[in-house]
Length: 340
Figure 1 (tube, helix red, strand yellow):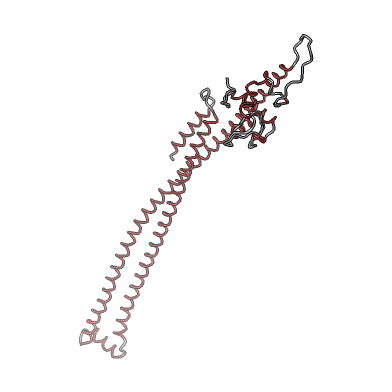
Figure 2 (figure 1 turned 90 degrees about the vertical axis):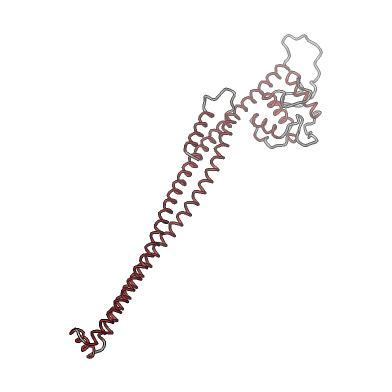
């Protein structure tokens, strides 16, 4: 991924999560989408880093092999030169020794050679021709070996230069991929931090709204059960009909509190707080699904109820979460005949 693409992602991040976001936009959803995009891009870039690292390793090995081959060739060239030089010196020494090794006779022959006459001078001329010819052959071999080795060395140097260029390119690609991956990781960490803060803020707002709703319900219930001032005397009222207890002891059967929830209890479960639907997906008096129950528990500030099967929770807990859900979504969560 190029640096330009990283800059574009960061710019999008600033626009989506900034304070100038459109009214009604969900910052949590926007941040989650942005974090998912960055996570995918980071995985792809990390794969690119791995590929680049492998390519750098292969190019480095090739360059090391080139250097070893050139060193071996240089050693062979030096050895060849030394052997030819030694052989040339040996040929010359042997020629002189053969000529000079005859003792007194050789001295006489040498004298005849120096005087310019006799068979010895002719023999010396012939031997000298042979010796010089041997040396010439050895020198020709030296030149051929040097030419071949020099050609091989030049070819290896060309291969080495190409492999060095490939290594430089792979190293540059690795550095770029590593830089891009680091930038993406930093951007992902920043977005993840903002997402955590936004989720916490959202949950706090939901808990506050649920608390306000519960308090309002309690006030309405208290106002409905208080005796009106100046009421005419009459026979004492009988005991209030029993009904399921709500938050803080509120009686949900009181029509002034919540006629709708009272109807839901009757229609959904017949008042059975341990009821479970035939498919096992809905539980309790209000027939909560587990995900809806968990969300209502968080909104009510009761995380200890998250994950608890609704039909196993107490009546007070079920009533509290029903009131909380109603305060947040009204009649929407229930689709029975109680809806108006």
